[in-house]
Image (cartoon, rainbow, N blue to C red):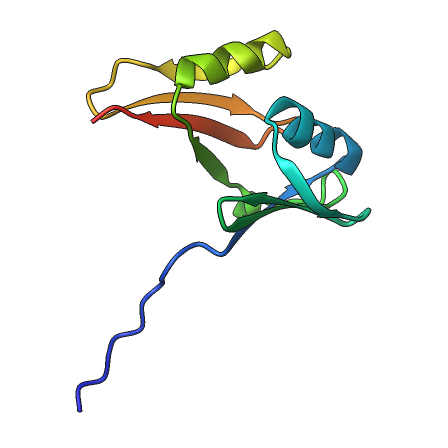
Length: 122
């Protein structure tokens, strides 16, 4: 009998660390428009297409470089999302809107975590 090689099937959840839970929940809920599944002072979870996206409280200065993360959100209309976030005061650190296969825009959350939008064009 041939034994199958174990494989990763999909991403189940993504968790990022934040220093101010209230400020971060406001950003992800009110600026990005994510729906809160559950929340307490230590962890807040949002649902995104079958993946749990969570925020976990960690005091400022307690993180190390091994905890850095970049998250890119798939969108259908990147310019509309850029306009929406800029209207709410979000500054973009990069916009690459003329790439051959996708459009990309990067911004930061209140803790400086790098986030992005990707619109597939090909």
